[in-house]
Image 1 (spheres, one colour):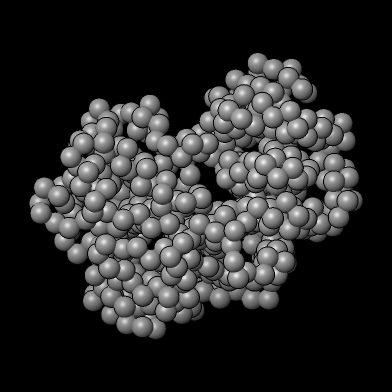
Image 2 (cartoon, rainbow, N blue to C red):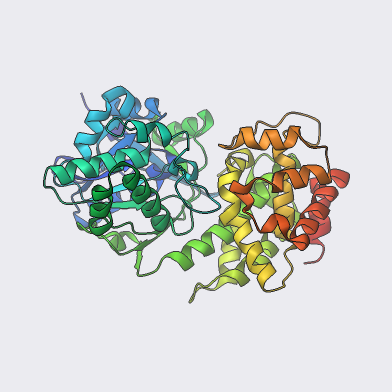
Length: 487
């Protein structure tokens, strides 16, 4: 029976999928990976005859995604959404899909130990690394990590699975693979190296030495806005293509990938599909994390509080648009080291992307996991401003917006469903403090987010407190308008 997706009104795979070699094992088969890295591989296979294929893996959660992939021969649809038109392609570079709980951990480890595997890439979100976002170091007592250290041959965490696969490759006399993070973290390769090597050292010092000598951890900067898939998304994809695809994903037309060219066992020619291979990704990462992700978080907290469900709703409010643009250029851009990029043009492009009415990127989705995001999206910039004695009003407002949001009650008195790996710690700070100054100081006391120095910085504390009290007194819309009036 012909696969239904091969009848879709979409760009279909024109290459022989049977000739693809599973050279990349990817951990974290979520919407972002489907719409980003896999699309680059699909373009290479279609336009340049590449034979680099994927084995897709979910370790925790996402069982249905893997089941949906298996049911349709590992094909799925990517729809690009713009205000003018939607276009679709059926991606065929996934040759296999596995789930650790369904197919068994041994199947996953065996796939990672196949001799031809050259790269293990990961999109497990910031909270999947078991590290402290404030320091970048592995937390040995982290709930993902501690059980694996007691039972390292039956791991559940990404770090544990990667280290066990590397241990088996070493024992079998196979070469190492490259470990490539595609998550939104500054120096994500450096963080991944720290986490993997610290975990390995806690398990086996000789193995840790071998990993440090043989495995590379290139940093990457990934950029494409991919809203969480909803029933409405799948309905629209079906209307567009004529085929129902439960594994489908929708995204904006824009995509960017900057990759540190440091691979021990080869790599695809990603540059032929538009990626940039560079010696140092960090300046690009910082640009994206601070200008895009930082303004996204700013809009997510303050937009949600104002009743704006989507980022494009925020963009219809001139004050929010002006505040986000000013945050990018006045407070984030000065902190950057990137060269050869027109940051004013970049900021204008970001505002245009945020305004895309087809995306419907939920503020609630972006607001998730703030404890993992604030350090690199806002607090690193605040530290730069304090060192240079510069104003950071909008960054302070963004931090205050997060504090107001994690209080768990919106401006209409309705509960906010806060989703965060440090939720218990945050709730303890909220419940144990009176509203106002005490609440701000209690939240600033969470060392895993704010570190040690910022909570002692009187100027920073005063700025955040002023913004927080304005949000309490006047609400988010009026406060953003007041702050935007300066620009």
